Image (cartoon, rainbow, N blue to C red; front, side):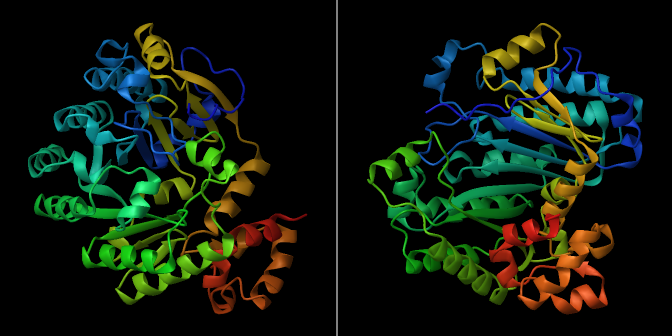
Length: 411
């Protein structure tokens, strides 16, 4: 199945030029860089990300491939340097995602990081993360990443239960997760493990087994996301035909509560609805920057960017992406300038998902009026709202976060 279509938007200039208003606060705002690596060995049935197997790209002779990707990404970094200009700050966080970033050689990932460093500089104590499949890293490749400046690896564990991994079409063996985590730690990098719950056929005991296995690895950070059946995926077709059951809201709620219970007991604190960390220092700063609405440049096919209230997204196919850059053009497919209303809505949507909460003062009148009812319904923490003037979700509120946002934004 092909990845989902790009959203519509306004035409993006071929130069990539941004309005001066978007650059006004550039020097005083953190800047992150996201690098999208669009390659996978196989396409998992649930995945809606912009990824391609080498067969889909046409094999080794494709216009852009694993062996040429780093050079292509550097061209977009040249564009970013030109567009953002001399006022651009040093980069605070880098996140390499996919796809399977570690399908690239470690030296290629380091080459891209070096390109960011050479064009923008890295801020002191910058966070530099790559995602990794458990079977796509070795102690040697991880050491090369660490020596090149990477500080953090996010390991795609998903589940510890073989039949769940089979349903998700994940190809790694559960034991490889422990090896990858140990090797990451031996290379002196922080390690996160990513989990998915709600897979068809996954029991509550299966999910408990995965959580206990994750906790036993003692990672610095755990992400746990509910499975979403995306239109156009193989899993969606299986659900539609009745081959596998659709995820159930009550089941996913039970599994979320179990995750919070076990992770909290093991010393992990939630800091975003789907993320837990051993300490504030172990939080994923790159993702916190997204949720806080700061600036980031997305490198790669289909990557999204945001600078100063302007959001844009690149063409999706790797060949089209590479062709534009070779021609000296921006790979942006379209863009939009966020209105004050859109920026307010996103501030409420994202701010309420964080443990630090959303300042009550950020709410408009109708939103403030809704706070008392949300506290009475057990969805917002009363003492935090009254003592600290911040809106913080309760556990029940995290389960019903969309409801909370809807009520805060209702006019």
